[in-house]
Image (tube, rainbow, N blue to C red; front, side, top):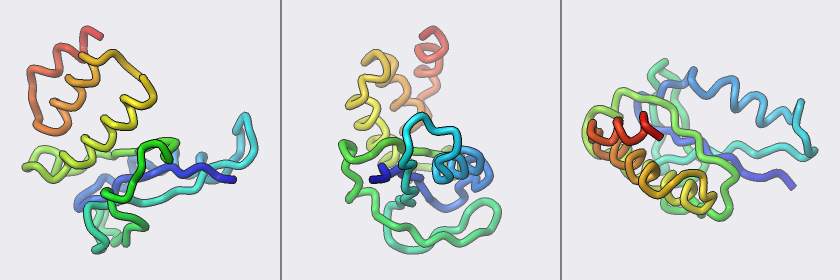
Length: 131
C-alpha cells in the first residue's frame, strides 16, 4: 500500500519548487522499498488555488482532515503569502505536529522553526542557524 505524501497548496505557491521531489516520490524509482507514495494535495479549503506560475489546482483534501499520524511527509513550498499575514500559519502548525511526532529535531529548534514560518519571527532565525 502506498503511503500518503501531503503537498500543501495555497494561493501563490511556488509550483516549481516541488517538481523533483514529487516526481521521484510518485514514480517509485530508486526507492529502497517498493510501493511508493500517493501524492495528496492539501489546502485550507476545497476551493481551487492559483499557483505563482498561474496553474489552477483543486485540492484533494482540506488541512483540517490531515492526520499527522497518517502522513509520510508534508511538503510546503514557498509562496508570496508567507510574508503576508496569517494564511500559512495553519500549515506551519500541521508541519509542527508531524515534526514533533517524528521527533525530528530538538524542541527549541522546532519552536524556532514554527515561530519563523508562522509569524515571520526573525529572532527565531538565530536559533535555527546555531542548531
